[in-house]
Length: 237
Image (cartoon, rainbow, N blue to C red; front, side):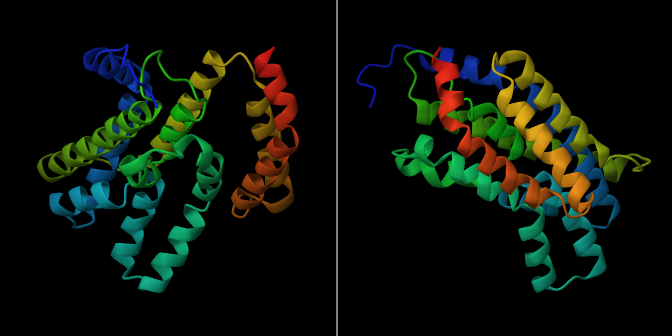
């Protein structure tokens, strides 16, 4: 518990804004793409707002458009969601200690732990004098606002202007690459990143492109658990 807040609210918001700038640029573009695709599929701005506020899962929302237009059953939607977002189980496990003691902020921190938010909060870095739970909460909230804003803009543009939607879904991959590069450049220790790359490449070769994700996440979790002591010693050196 921080007895003294040595950083002002304005300074903290400024730090959070600059920390989330890569996600801002990506989520606005991605959200616009999602809103356009949703609008072109016959679902208006109300759907865009509800899905982005309550589902808030970029890749699953793109998949969800197909589920909506195909009339998929609730069971199909539930199983598909579990498969697409199973990686978040591993994100959550790794954040248990950091989110401990977050109080009323914890439910939202858990809900808002997207891939990009995880990339920003998983390093454990917190500005001097800031409440770590408030800092991570604001990062999560800012990113959520970016996504909702982009979705609404896309829905409005999709209704007003003609767009070619082919290739829009690749913007999600582009954002993942951007976040990975940003983390690579800012972190002095590249071993966790290399572990993830090697585990993913191995799982891809063994299981193929349609089934590699969950095995890759399991392998990454096991490898990082085994290497935890070595990585912590290296970080403290």
